[in-house]
Image (cartoon, rainbow, N blue to C red):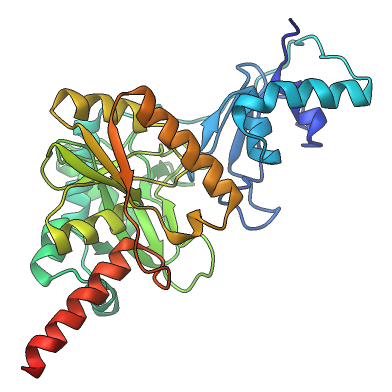
Length: 357
């Protein structure tokens, strides 16, 4: 049986090779990069893996082929063999390639990240327009305060980092923090938006997402400083809203999970995207140990029309089946993209009826 390497796959897919011969390099991510100039998908030729720190999608040789072609992963090997046969192409030997040194800190312990992010958020405020945005989604003022949503800092980020250090908090290995040109610690400057704490099953802040203002595509992105001196990349963390119960809802996006939980009281687990399942299995294993038996999926309505999303969703259902969860899917009026939108509309209509009486 032939063994393929990721270099074989990038040849088949016409993905460019690294110009400097390095073993790890970045290309445009088909999931989250909206222009060729943006390159967040890391391809590692030495380890035969790929990963996007921005949206969390990752995998190996067959996953990469499936990602770029739409061929289901379990049929990828056969498709590769067929394509190679047509091209009269044979797999390459894995060659030794030079490796670029990336000046990047490994991610630190979740409790350290939680302490640093909690103090950071306590130093920030929430702009009135962002508060209105959250209220219009169905969150109450009390919930907004509890969830610790804040507006991204647009100035004074070096001073903020200094204050955190003076409090004895760690910045190295915490995504978003890096050293600037003066070698002073600072916090990443991002497009203005809402900072969203992403929490583990114990309520600790693992990382932060941003809902960016005034952008058409990729409104949500991770707070990451991977491309900065002594920075640290974010991972595709899951997010839990609510106390652990035997049945939970599984959806896409931490903010959506928070809104659904706030409106219904149900426990909601969020993944960054239906194709970003890097952290999901380990989270589900922990939840299963804590008594979760049933999972109801509630992904946006484009699941019906987008083949790539459908492919990811099928992988998700396969995982749930392998882990012996009972599972089903919530359905709602297709005029509303997400379950959160639909629930909020229903509650508004109920309130209107009550007022009319």
